Amino acid sequence: MPGDQMAAQLDDGSTVIYNLGDMAWVITATALVWIMIPGLGFFYSGLLRRKNAGSMLWVSMIVLATVSFQWFFWGFSLAFSDGANSYLGDLRYFGLKGVLAQPSIGSPRIPALLFCIYQCMFAAITPVIAIGGLAERGKLGPVMVFTFLWSTLVYDPIACWTWNPAGWSSKMGGLDFAGGTPVHISSGTAALAISLYLGKRRGYGTERLAYKPHNTSYVVLGTVLLWFGWFGFNGGSALSANLRGVQACIVTNLAASVGGLTWMLWDYRLERKWSVVGFCSGAISGLVAITPGSGFVGAPAAVAFGIIGGTVCNFSTKLKFWFHYDDCLDIFAAHGVGGIVGNILTGIFAESSVAAFDGITTTLPGGWLDHNWIQLGHQLADSCAGVSYSLVMTTIILWIMHFLPGCRMRIDEESEIIGVDDAEMGEFAYDYVAVDAELGPKSNLEGAPDAGRGGAGNIENMMEEADNSHQHSMDQEKQQTV
Image 1 (tube, one colour):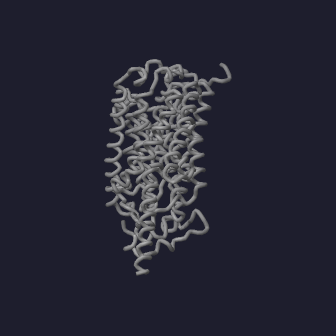
Image 2: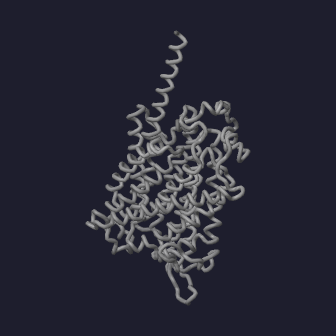
């Protein structure tokens, strides 16, 4: 047997041959996706106020650990069992029983055990994205309970219907290469549900929350780790070291680059400043948008994904002002809306010739570029199902936990004033954290949202608040003069 191949004996006595290069690439991709999880923690941490910075780092690691257990316990079986129905798997692989060397349900080129750990990373990062909705006003202890329940009741069913061959979206013909619906739409919508459940932070609608990200270096570091890991997120989803995986890496990098430039230019028109936070936010939006189509589209299409994703997500930061919810990290705008944009564009730009780069996928009908007009309908159906299911189920989970002892998610006002880090962890991201500015009377703090990721909505709101503040000061000066 050649040195680049491995033979595995199955229970039925048959032998299967795996290419060690394919396995090595998926193992590497697993590590790349893993590093995205603390990267997301740094990204979120940098966007918040100093007194809450450590909490998002805690969340990223604790959620990773919780999901790793849940995935072993029954998560993998619920999502990828061979005995799944159209919506959910059975418990055939409970405790990973029988998950060994047999060809995986995702691809016959890698064993089930390797596919399991690779998909575990997707399952772990998804609730980390969602739980950013707790930022600055959520308790940390209940996060572990919420994560286990949400992964079981929301992520696993959506992953099953999207990627399991028995799932209804998979059978319908929905195209989602790396997680537009299971990862981004589900988490972005869950963050919206969390924001609605928790309500607004203390001081919402005043200058007190019109702050800019406290640590730009953390934002850049988080973006670097996410961008770096996304090569394994999208490129690894080919589940083989082949040309399709290379193409996925190319469009991933291109969409991120164009998305970052697009967002930064939109922000420049408002402040005449070259914002690195804006660039990072746009890069993430481009990465989110290209995720479902990364294994189906060519490089020219990736430019469109970046421009449209960066633009739509930028202007979607206005949604929280229009509908009066407090999503301080703009998770729904970046991941929820970005995932929908990516799904729609995949229905338009998907090409059967690109999918065939792996040497296996030869019957994919493609999207509008291949005159497969129904594909856009499939993408819209999958997106709507993901949004509605995640929103409803997340809300139900939150309200069930609301009435369980010790599981209520909202912190009290005093804890919000001193910061989640001190109140919930007793530890800080920095040696010095100032809270004096927060100790004013509550009557002065009712009603400007934070800057979040920048974006048209956040920046225009901050400029309006600054104008109002300036006008208020001038009015007071005039009164004193009189």
